[in-house]
Image 1 (spheres, chains in turn green, brown):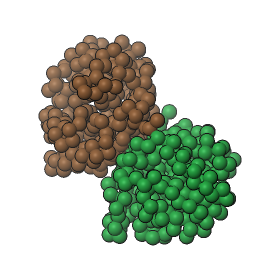
Image 2: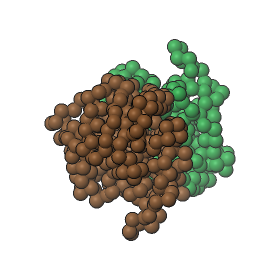
Image 3: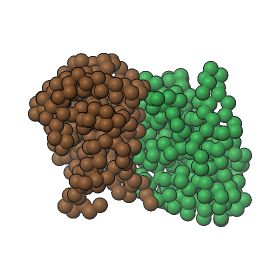
Image 4: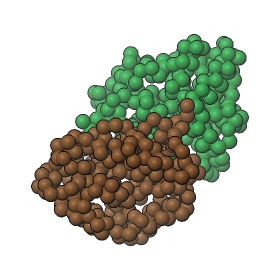
Length: 254
Length: 254
């Protein structure tokens, strides 16, 4: 049996593949292979011109993934997309779809779809980021129709420090933020570079709220697009929803 | 516990991370994280000038990995290095060491070290490659002091076709080639992009010869450099050798 006999999921990662690749693999079911490609834009401090260049490189990366016979593309770099404004994400996704002909899932887009699937109208959002980036996230979610009750971040400056957190960091921040806003209908955990997937189920159990974590939303979006009706169990309501709702798109029977 | 609490192994991959990242993860013990970065040189059809540019990009990639706090660097792209001649590999490794200050393991260098550790003086080599690349491999191994009794490849032209093989492909080709040269003291399986690690133990059992596969040699080299005294069990003699021989380098007690 070859790797990726069920599907090859291409993943465009800004900068580096460490936590996100590890966590994607935890979620992907048998026969679905992670196919990773990095680009090198310094995404945390991105001006408008750099953002335009980053878009071009992401589209180039998408084309390379298409040549590597991936079945869908997951595009990270949520901050890059948002640096072009709330519509940046949809623009990037459209561009990638047009140039590759493949299903495309962006980090921001998957999160919106996931929150909608879970019926959330209001939420709290947590991240490892500085306040300025949390505000961008809040703006994007508000523009997408959600009531954002709070955004809180660890305030970390360097991306490498996201990757060296323990998963307790996301759990603690999310639990505290949710406790301060008991009316929130969901918890959003931004950024696939700090570890989160191992605490999703516990956080849902302890707060009673559905949790959408960026890495989980990206994998969920790709599996859903490919009509794959399961993921590894134990990673929360969003991924469990694949078991009941999967219906293969026309022309692709998996 | 954070990912990579024991070590972060940086991996420079030419083109794409699919099979190699999957197989590295199978071999890495708990607490050792794969940190991947791709470059985009079209490595199969590389002229001398392109090779020089590829060297520069690999060194850039090494510096980026160092900034991502990796503890060692594994450098793929064996054909890139060999396209500068039999010394190209050592040149690239030296350059990376000098620029990053980190332990550096190259694909070709790890294979030579591994074959020496296993006491092999003669070998057969198999790959998914065309004949011209097999000849380059043969030349390199001969220049490194081994008697190369045969090199055989699947003759595949496109790299993506390496990744979509089943592991039987490497097993069958290696077993046949070894059977035709019973005096060979080892089997070398080149290229980390076709699947191999799951057949190493079976191939050793069935031929009685030690097997050095590129992916396994790269991981072994990195774990050895970091003084990590084990890997996941069941992947052959080379990786099992870590259990008995590990001695932490001075200044690093793991």
